[in-house]
Length: 244
Image (cartoon, rainbow, N blue to C red; front, side):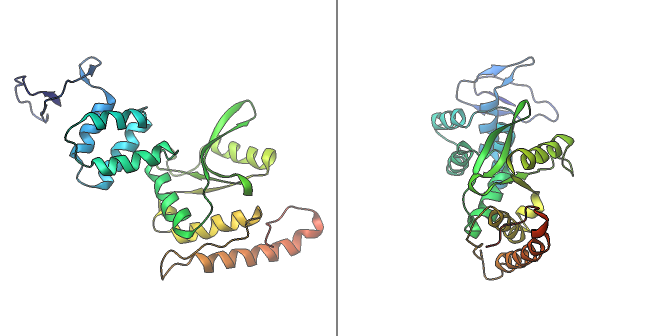
């Protein structure tokens, strides 16, 4: 609980009192600090980068605007984790809306030298607009990142319909990844993304992110399997992966 340093507040079990010298903007009943101030207070108290990431992703999910957070942070004379907050919010302004998206872009795409996707791309399917987390427009590939909060263990029925519509209406395929694929399995995920890009005409290959990176080897396996499948289906007229 944040209160003005001038107020006297009686201690209460389970309540931590934070005394601040700035003017507090309150909302709701009972009164509480507004979302942006609460988020910055929690950023200030965060012990590490993971804590800052969690606070910012929650604040943005609840409707806080990145530019408003940056402006409010600039007005604070003292703010722990200020540099990290600026770095992360700059990325959020570019379109990254969750920790999972940030990690995917860093660990899978950039670490393996893959083309940059369009983030949070809006597309009209049927009678409404939908957003794709990552869209490689030139190569007809979309990536959806399923965090546990929004997608507890599986794609929703709406997700399945959206993926089907993308294939039927735009010939875009959709790859889905979760936390494990972005952190521990980033190299295999990069190989799959590169193979999906190759299907849409991409001529490059994933670059190794470290000495033990398996992405190039996994990519070559996928390409060889695609060639074998294409040779079997060519006579049927079924669209196969582009492997040239």
